[in-house]
Image 1 (tube, helix red, strand yellow):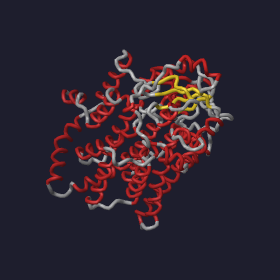
Image 2 (cartoon, rainbow, N blue to C red):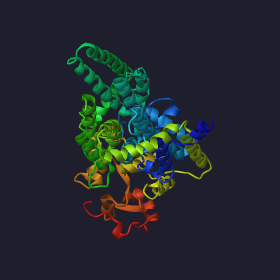
Image 3 (spheres, rainbow, N blue to C red):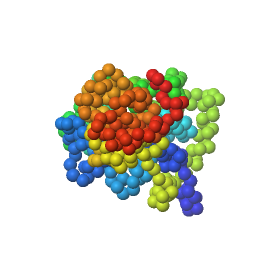
Image 4 (cartoon, rainbow, N blue to C red):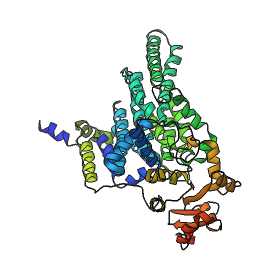
Length: 522
């Protein structure tokens, strides 16, 4: 009885992983979840849906006329974010996503543990995945996809290798997923790989083995087809299935938006160590990958090398495979195998004695209490976001159309919509190639800059104080600086209609020192 009581107070290895990630994000690294301002426009989109009981089919945040067609494919995530924001402010949003991210790696470790492998080895792999995945931890809808892909992957794996059939849950998950985030396409990729494997094995197997693969192929096929039908239950019907392909086929987006670019291996990315570890383990294990494992590793490695935003997905998919392969290596005798076995022998009994969810529950409760009492509070960092500049805009109420950076556009939507409507924001898939090209002509000071400003009747510009565009406009007589801080500059067109404001702020000077300015060509 006493041992049972004591075991409640012993945190499991999975509990420790949850606590480490959750507390890190809730305290010291919480602002990292607001590293970009997309969170802001998602919240306002969710509020629009709640206020109007309708999901927008056309753009509501830009001044462009006629309004662009908008596939608000993350509408359910945006409603959740809006509800959290209304009840608990931005702090509530950050804490919620901190919880979801921590739950992703808790469930990942728990899922790998069901194979009864070396606990110490499992922990090392998951920690490596956690470190590599931080590159795309943001308070945005794609976090729901990370959470759901862990569950989806586990259900498929359990059915394939252990005959645990819980595939009836997949259509229910898909009903949520297709309305939460465009990452639902990963579910079909995973299901397709498992289905293809069973069909392929069906043609080369005999007897009972053939019957088993036939049964699995039928059930997986039925589940996948059911998920396909369920995926049509969304505001955009079958068009939602085409959206991810339209997005990834847009070369302007893929080649110019930072998060779609390939990882930069000149930076200290933990991902490169995860990738090198994967290569080493697969090369040295001596155990051949089956067709499912090979397909998953090849496809998700390609995706992670193509775009840095897919690195967390690669980590989730690779972790169970790498753990199983490394476990096979430990069957041999040697110093390394002995090291891992001894560590596992020490940790496993303690982990096995842990029961309940006391520590994760206590951590979440403690953070909620601290947030409710104002000791934990989050918002966009005014040192890197145009917080003060937008307050100036709200006070002065500038007339006419703006030109803005896409990142600033997200914050303006969050802080100053509907008073101001933007030129562009984080919904670059909606704006399309032509608008993005126009944006770059101005932002990069390319030929045709003035044609774009004239076409859209731009009266004022808010842009990064360190940008080449800001330095260019400071030298011009046809634009006047009326606001400056170390984050943002605001320029007003030098025309008679703006004379009053120009005179009012004629003493404004750039806030950056010469040495802080962006070097030419950077």
